[in-house]
Image (cartoon, rainbow, N blue to C red; front, side):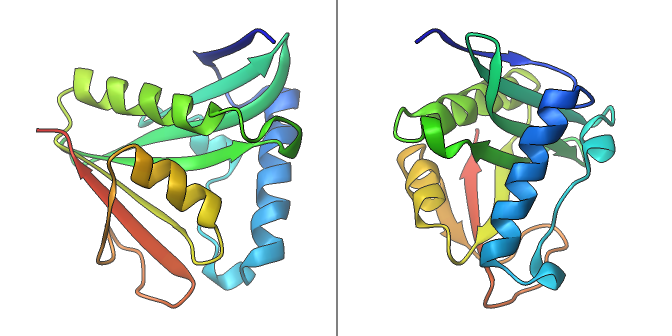
Length: 152
């Protein structure tokens, strides 16, 4: 397999399909009022960089860096298709997000994930993230788990 990860626009049809799969998966595990989805259009904003993983051209994973206030970056929209899980694609995307954040001088990465996403927790914890109290303007609910990592 030749899996490549690159910065791409999320406004491509195959990436839109990937994000729809992500949203559908999240809605199976978390009530809609507790999901904090970015639309594909929001992902295309200038404050966000989207990484897409492709296997021989097929979009099979994604993740994004959303910038906040010049010092904080947020990991968003992490997803790997079930057919490609277990290959550390999510870990590779997180590495790319962290490298970009570091290169841009961001001091801290944060994220919110669901309380029913243990596979995601493993990816973040292996990448050096630690659980923390609520970040940014996310509400403190039983449905959310928060992580942070200092880049200093």
